[in-house]
Length: 477
Image (cartoon, rainbow, N blue to C red):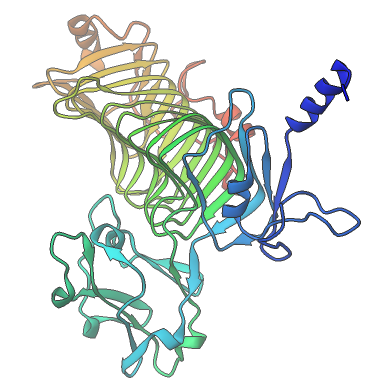
């Protein structure tokens, strides 16, 4: 029996139609097909994100229930098609890496001191990132993966509410990065471990990429309480888009690109992580609509030979290092970063924006407030930017820095280029020496530092589309 051509085309269209797949950890069934349930009881959501991603084909959307998942979203060699991406829509779901400690797995070695010898598989990098949640609050014990860290205490030195880790060399495996040892927790006198409300980060990432991934969209997802990155992107990826994602209180980076990852981010909030954004390797990334605060090690950290861009961003910096652009010593390509309409406001102690050799920074409509600016090498272009604040910052430039500037506003303590220091009165000499800074102004610093029109970050635009309501206002500059 032959079918008319139109029927054959319709059949093909239905076969190629994008599907909606559903994941619900409470009502789902791993033996279901993920499709919307029918009245006759057929179909229905699957239980795990892993199953939903496995079932997804080009053009399909995996919908997560807007609940807390004790699971990571893992993408390994997942590929959509051009114009038909595989979409993971979290609908506000939270991927939580933390689990309450199991009192049965811990031994009380002395009153109030508890030990666990096999919490999970470990290496030195995990220990450097480690924390416990104690009654809902992160306790890093003064440690961070990127930056200065306090040494681990001896168990007998712990105070109530503290933890430590002690290696066991007797269990070491030759030629292995895996380490063995014991975690210790110190509780207040008389408190039971079951009542202490302690959570351990048992998963490494909220969203994890490895292998070769292409034509994907991840949107409306929250990652929290993992011991590594909220969004850990390894391997190679192309045509990948993240939309409206958050990373809160993760052990390492809010998001981090590695190797040859290529992706775009539209809407990113990073709060309470060791690093806000950290991209490495030869990755190619862009971030638009970004809000970062309460980091420990770095706020913005870009390395190696990648090409990076950040636009329409607010960074409220209280980390050890506010901003670092760091190329490789022997680099075929420099580490390149473009900033457009970015406010980096230092709200912690002294810090600086640092550009190293083999790096290229191009910034427009960017404000560096309350932090120094130092370039030890590389190439820096500032246009319509502002550097000022309290404490009054300074600019320090090594002799081999290639400096380009125009239409900037400075409120500085000093500007040092190689061995020569310039002041507001001698700024014209710097302009003549470098042939740069046409249209720029250096004003005496004061508590009231009005910026010329179209100079520095557009705060009104950032307040309207970037900054969470709870973190307003930004108007005081």
